[in-house]
Image (tube, rainbow, N blue to C red; front, side):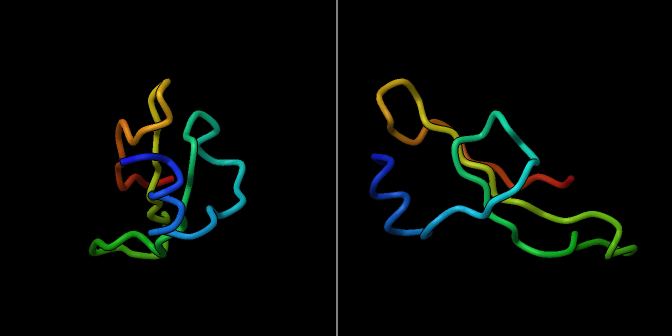
Length: 61
């Protein structure tokens, strides 16, 4: 999927200092586990050299 299609689907990325190596970062909310509120979940998106989606993952900070 091209980068502009990803942006149309997800909207503008959130501004954060976390995950500096990612191309787009989206805050999803508090981590979903037994002890929530300690960490946050984020969607991180990476594009390849051709500006197409290479990888996306939900990660915690």
